[in-house]
Length: 99
Image 1: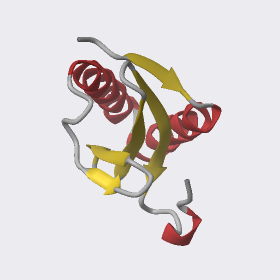
Image 2: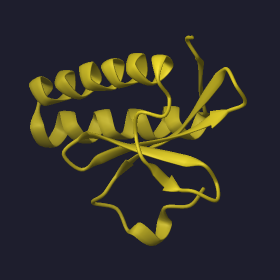
Image 3: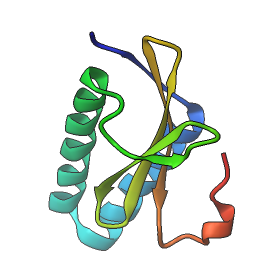
Image 4: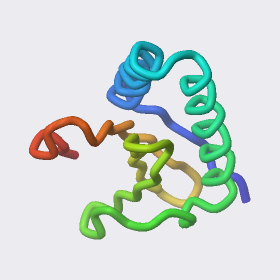
């Protein structure tokens, strides 16, 4: 069974911020690798959303390391949907990571 993906506004914003960061700090090659990795992870979790470990069991939030220090957080919503919540760069202050 294939799940549908819902990208939150916060996830869209953090994705764009990470693209900007990667482009400035690492260049186009690393940026494209990041984009390809996100695409492959999204395809994988559409088929098996339980593929990656729980980050917050009480909130049912899962985490996937995308590249280096960038983590994608998502939640399985119901029986057929996945909500992409955030792309978090671990260079940030961890106290700001809130769901």
